Amino acid sequence: MKFINSIFFKLFMTFVLFSFIPMGIVGWFAYDKYSNNLYENLQYHADDVLEQKMSFLSAFIKDLERMDQGITQSKIFSEFLTNTNPIDHPKYYIELDELLLSIQNIRPETEGIMIVSNNGFIYNYGYSHDLHFKNQDFKNLPWVKEIEKNNYVTPQITYLHDQPYSNVDKKQKVYSYVKKVWDRKIKSYGYLIIDFKEDLLEAILRHDGSTSFTSSGTFIHDSLGFVLEPEINLEYKDVAASISGSTIKSNSGKEFIVFTKYFPQTGWYVSEYFEKNAFYVTVNEIRKIAIIITITSAFICLLASLFISHRISTPIKNLGRVMKKVESGNLDERFVVHSKDEIGDLGKGFNTMIGELKKLIQAVKHEEKLKKEAEITALQLQINPHFIYNTLETINSLARKKREPEISRLIVLLGKLLRSSISSFEEKIPIKQEINYIVNYLEIQKVRMREPLNYTISIDPMLDEYLSVKWILQPIVENAIIHGIDPLKSSGNIEIIGENRGSIIIFTIKDNGVGLDSLKLQQIRHQLQFSSKNLAKYKNKIGIYNVQTRILSHYGSPFGITIDSEVNLGTTVTISIPMEVYDAQNVNSR
Image 1 (cartoon, rainbow, N blue to C red):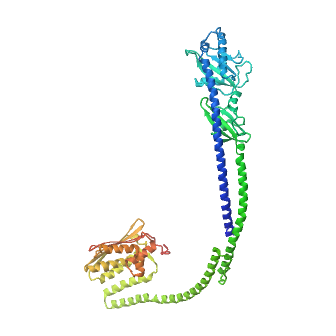
Image 2 (image 1 turned 180 degrees about the horizontal axis):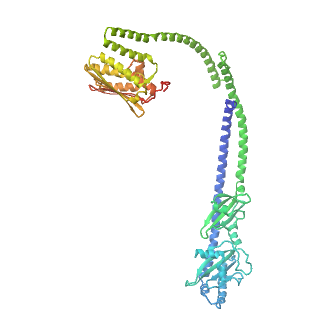
Image 3 (image 1 turned 90 degrees about the horizontal axis):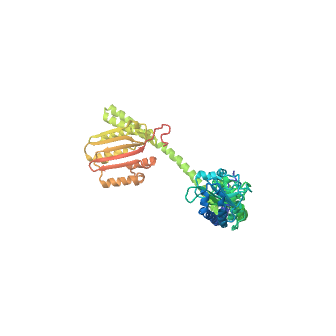
């Protein structure tokens, strides 16, 4: 674990990562770019090949349609469909043979042509007809049932099937161009069937040899299965679920990229496939070369990283050893500087710091001595408040003996104020203590004032046990009396209100004094917001600025003092502090 956390290990890993990652990213991007370009070229080539084969297939379908039109538009064909007399049936053979002889020249490769009448007659051309195969047998063929079920009037090309109606080779596999046809008066109907062998479709789609790729070929499928089987062993479900340009795995484990186009005339999907490994052979070679280059470069970077990390980490280790010796108390130890780089500057700075530290320790020892002397003096000065309080008690006893109750009352009130100042060194006190303190203060001021001083205090009882910064009301009340009410030379009123608003405690101090003009009010507001701390610390502003500074020190913004005033109408000071629950064990922890 120590080695993992060492700076040598961190530097080494940093150099390694900054070496391996860029090379890996560059190699991957190069491979990906070349692979994508190659794939795009293949896609373009496949689209071109498929367009050519679709063109060949379209020409073949058009030839079949021409044969269809040449047959169905002839007079002899219409007469054959409408014939119902078995005796007259053979007489149509000669004319039909002559007609089909000329029609077959359009596509001599066709296997045979058959016309089936709904009147029960069958005519065939190009092969010997099985006389036992009747009209009803024809209608029971699966592909004929499919055409009947869908009521097709457009020509359809069947899937590959045998020829049960042939007298010679019933197992011969053929495709059939099938169309439901009518006579000229649309009274009788029948079926025109043009058979062609599987190798004819293969010749049309596979004879061009235009592809320059090895292990490629063409196949056709529709919604039911393969129309032209692929030369590779692919599952139909995999082909049906794929999209053009996707990869399909054969039963032998080889992967093939398959591109597909839809042929709307027949409802077929014509696909061109390419073996993936044969296609990506160049890319794989480039990948191997890139891997070899990356590994070689990485090994060189590894050696360079070891060397650089060692050169950087060794001086740092030496500096660490010197630091440990200094930590144990040996302040005479120094780091020997050999380099002029940043580590050398760090070593020089460390040596300078040790020298300054020795001086500082000596100064701290001297300061500790002075501090002890100051503590003794502070303890002596602490006696003075107690002495004053005890002296007031003595004066109070004399006042009672002399029967001076007013003087005695003032001394008692002053004693309570003094007791409050020396009885607690806590920074925060319960609000009820703050209110008791301000009541004592106001009672003294009532005696001092020449004119009557009236006051009301309305504090929500639920606030009694919440905490407040100590002595935040007295300076405000004192300002109200001295600067507001005294200049009136008439009776004065002070109102103190305490309430909570949500999680905030609001104290409001109102007086009916002389008030402030707008310029003075603006000046005080600005000082409260921006310079209360400096005024309280350096200008001895003990009143409102001192209170603002202490509130901000404890609670921060947005708490503190706001002030409103109008000339001859009085002044209103608002103090806001957060609600803080009293905790006798930890009263000043918040």
